[in-house]
Length: 173
Image (cartoon, rainbow, N blue to C red):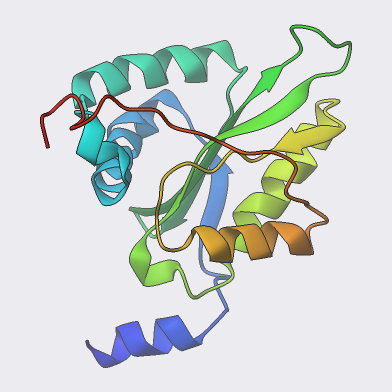
């Protein structure tokens, strides 16, 4: 590990990181980051990532403006993403529902995740969402850290996610 990386991990200062909403020009970088995220999760054991399909879907989501994607850039390098959508199928107010949260491993011991979550909560509240749910199903070792961070924002565990996969999984693993 180089000295710069050690220093970054010890520092919580990410003031040099630009955080902004995604545009269509960001789609290839987001799809690439989602691929890295996918392959690090338990989902890769059961499913196959499709970058072309992801790119098409991201263009639809960003155009529709119902699924914001917050992006964190260190210079030109995408180092974090938090995306969510709004659901109000059965209620008057929209409910914010997190879709993906991923911070590059080099930036996980910084305050970048807190910045992304805080800004997402602020934007969702501004869009009229009094509730924001964070379903977490990646199986990443950092899940406990994410839950603890969400508790600092006033979050509470309020449900359970159960996954059922045919024995051996669809890939016969």
